[in-house]
Amino acid sequence: MSLLTPDFGLLVWMTLIFVIVLVLLGKFGFPVITGMVEKRSNQIEESLRKAAEAESRLSQLADEQSRLVEQTRAEQSRLVKEAAEVRDKMIQSARQKASEEAAKIIAHAKTEIQAERESALRDLCRQVSMLSIDVAEKIIRKDLDKGENQLELVDRLVREASQMREKQS
Image 1 (cartoon, rainbow, N blue to C red):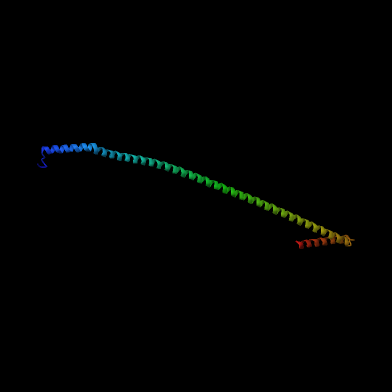
Image 2 (cartoon, helix red, strand yellow):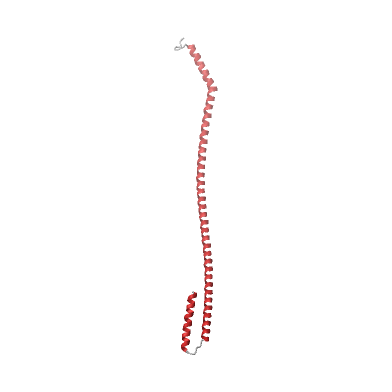
């Protein structure tokens, strides 16, 4: 009996053992193998489904991030605009206060100038009055019997008064 040319009995036993192994594998082995393959297939499908969900969630998060960035930019723009408005109001308020203060200072200066002017005019009127009284007194004291003397006296007194006024200036 050679292995290359087996006998009929050997073929029967080999066939019988093959069938028994095939039946045992079919009953116990293949279901386990098939179950493991199905389990692995289910795991792969579950992983693919979770990956798709993760991708979908990632897309939603990206959209939400874009929306939040846009919202933040709008808020930033609004805050910058409000800050500019507040700055402009502060500048306008400062200008208005400065204008009011300048107007008060100018009005006060005008009032002081007017008061000084009136004081100077009163002093001038007082001096003119005093000069007039002095001139009149001197004219009365002087012997005024001739018309020529009167004119000379008036001319001389006017010259003296103008010289005194020039000295005071």
